Image: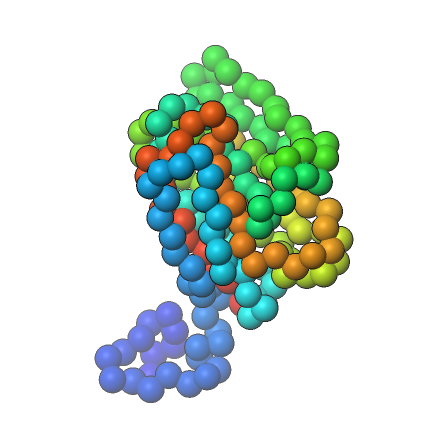
Length: 177
């Protein structure tokens, strides 16, 4: 049999071969309205770390897009740096015990793409963290941040400040250790 990720029709897969798969799709969701949406059952005890991929995301108007662990609205520390491709707008958003972590500047064209890693959301240690990149409306963004909380989280919330979602595809993958 071929070595994964090349699979042959009719071949038997062993547990060792399946355990060698690096990323495993855990959850998909779609957002079509509202200013926030909780993505439930995204983090399980099966994985320690996760990759979240957001594609074809749009909001009714250009807005700051944010992330929260579960529905927690305090205790976030982090930075979002953004740069417009034409050089007309560059800046930094910092959170010091803030209500969320900024991850993008969304726009009304479904071109927002975001990819980030989520570290230890199920841990009962004090820190759950994210770091990643985004692109939308001519803005590239780089972000990282943490929530100081010893409570394990199974969900996360995405939101747009001062606007509403019109479309958004969300994919959550668990990392194999």
